[in-house]
Image: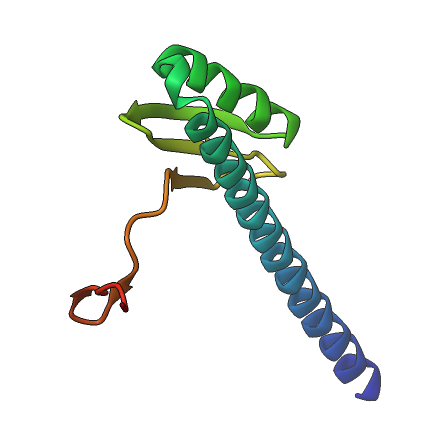
Length: 116
């Protein structure tokens, strides 16, 4: 009887261990896609003056260097909006990021006034 319980507990632990490993792989893929999207958005915003085509080519190079694929890229003015995807095992998270110049400081009720 003890052998049956030991086998059951061993199987249950294997299932839990497998679930934890899968969850870890999902989290790692999501973080990798997020980092690639952030860096690609920064690269595109940095090259916004080159036009949308040049900025998106730079974003694609940066995303590729991070092991990601650029899914979508647009540049409106000096704000870049990109979407990147990473394939890690059976998971393919897609993350969107935006980058551009900082606006005026914002408080809880709107723009902060300059202190004289």
